[in-house]
Length: 331
Image (cartoon, rainbow, N blue to C red; front, side, top):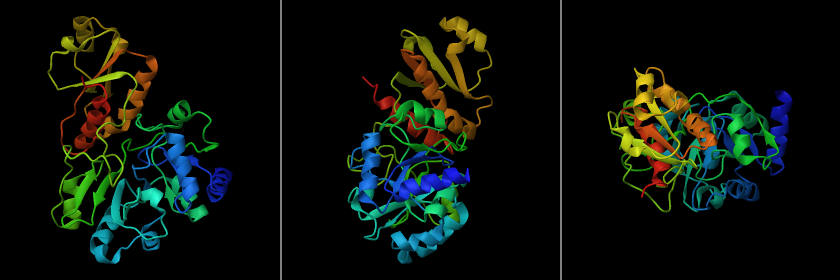
């Protein structure tokens, strides 16, 4: 693995793009200080230039290199002390060393410290900040294992490091600490309540109704994380027969008590009934969310019916990803 780390580092220093694992999803990384290298990310993904990227750093000591921290130092110290390395991204005023292409011309930059040994080893070896969105075509389901990356990006990236299955499975929480009251721009595993306790001040929770055509952080577009297969969401205890159309798969948050009965009632094969978690644990649901959707997409169903989660804790982030994925298929 040391040789792989060194090879990835050389590729990044030479202006190339590599695929690296994080605890959230796999990332498509480039030297954030090299405008042309960053441009390759947008080209490979087919990502619009008005959708900014996240800057990945080794630890909080790197923040002064790339952002203006002093005014927000108390909040920064509390957040990084409690959650870094980990799945939370903070918004700070950027320094001129960061090319505008990284931030889509905004004067703020989204920064996070990933908690995966391979990504961290590359950061340490290269001594570079890495811009890295998810390693998949823009708008598609994010990858949580290397196989999904290869299936969607093919040979467009020379170096892909396999770090196993992502442990979180959802993109990081994005927190804007530059506003008068800190606010969540993208929900993730670390919730508003948890952040509020650490900051010892109010935090404005994520509002799904606020959609920007020119987002200042990733994950704010109304339509995102989409499968190719039609995706329809349903609430618990809803009559599902009205949604059946063609070859249909159904995914529940937790294993139903009577799988055989559901299959018989809806006249579906058992293999078309799935669940994200045996017991409904939302952390497990989050971990399995994208991989399950990608697996179903590869089977070429006509419709995927997916149950909505309870909007508590990480369930807010799960519902956000599913809502944006299903937006594409609304009539």
